[in-house]
Picture 1: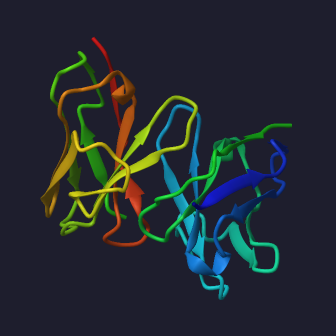
Picture 2 (picture 1 turned 30 degrees about the vertical axis):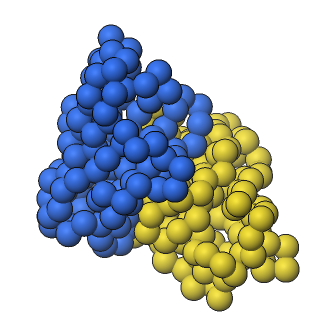
Length: 115
Length: 107
C-alpha cells in the first residue's frame, strides 16, 4: 500500500520560493512516477509535473519557468520547488503516484502565499 | 492543452437515484479518460481509469463509458457516501488536464 505525506512551510511570502517534500512509504520510490498536483481553495485541479527515480522530469508548460522537481532515492522522498510565488499560487498541494493518471494521493498540504 | 468540460457543474439527487455526469474533451482523447471523487477537505480518489475500468476497491455501482470526445460517469443507486465532487481528467496528452468538477449534493 503506497502512502504519501507532504511536508513543508504552510506560509510563503510573495516573490519567494515554495518548497515541499513528499515522503513515500510502503513502496520503493523507484517503483513509480511521481507527480505534484495543486488545487486553489474552492477551485479545480492542476497537474504541475512528474519525476522518475532516474531524475527524468516533465513539467506543465504553464509553470515550467518556475518549477523544479527533484528526487532522493536514499530517503524515498521527492521534492517540489516553485519560484517567485504570488497569491495565485495559494493552494493545497498534493503529491501523487503516476505520470498520467493518479491512483494514490497524499493528504495534501495548504500553502498560503502572503506577506 | 486539451480542455475538459463537465456538465452539470452541480446537481441535487436523492439516495437511490441514478446519476449521470458528462465530460467532454476539446479534441479526441480515445479512451484516455479518468474519473475521481473528492469529498470535502480530502484528497481526490481515483474511481475509473481508461474510460471504463473500475479502480480496485471501487463499488460496482460506479461505471464509466465513452470514447473520443464524450464520456459519462454513472452512479447507480446513489448512496449517502457518494455525495461529493467528481472530476474527469484526460491522460491522452501532456499536460494532463482536469474538468471543472461536478458537485453532487443531497436533494
